[in-house]
Length: 384
Image (cartoon, one colour):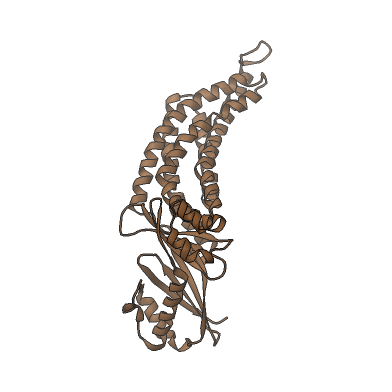
């Protein structure tokens, strides 16, 4: 334990103590933020990566630096006072902010980062932050605010122990550093809360579809049947499954205000894309959505050439075409021809860009959105 020795002045002792207390508070806050980020988004990234999900680590890359900075800043603020009450209050507020951050990272913040990196998706709600997400974020914020009160109380005790284990010259010993990492078990509970309320509803549809595909590839169709997965899908499309494949979370089923049912796309090498509808742990059905997209593009071209809107009378899943797209097709019908090739240009969430190359060199790029229903929101044209 550090005490004022006969050879040390009281002022030097106080300066050493203030420096250690401040550093320990900042380090404790940063370590808590790091532990929270790794337990919340790091574990999620590992699971999503195993199942070949697109941009599996993006949430971690977004949330980790913010969490560390937020924790360190709170530690710095609490180090300015020796009041346990203020430490508890500030950490309670910070806990609530952590909950709000965790609720927005997979939605608004992820959307913004993707749009910043790819102008085709800029300004789009790739994953909308809807009412269910608002409620779950509020619950997470309240739960983490309560945990933050505990963290604030523990922080002051940890800082005391760090100083007790410091060297007589005011430097941190090995025991001082070890004490700081008591924040790891403190970060476990809020990470579990966020996982249950926010991460799990997004992850479950992806992992269930990923399990279906991987089991079919590795163990075969019969193994899918034995494990109670969607045998009909494996039997119908299994011979078209191939590595490497990528999973895209499309959207939650919009007809309900819950996060129970969702749609997932699986993009395989070549031009085969499968869309699956899930409900809880079950994969209800899967369809060759790449074939449908090609048919919808063909319908758009036909409308541009003839004015006939076949999607209004056709059988099967219909599309809803915006007035802007209809106007564009009418204005650019002369550039379209009956000889063309169609390819998938890019996808983020439920947004899919389809590119059509005509034999005259003209290119048409159309943006589709959603799963039930599917909208055609925009078409643009260009010459290479």
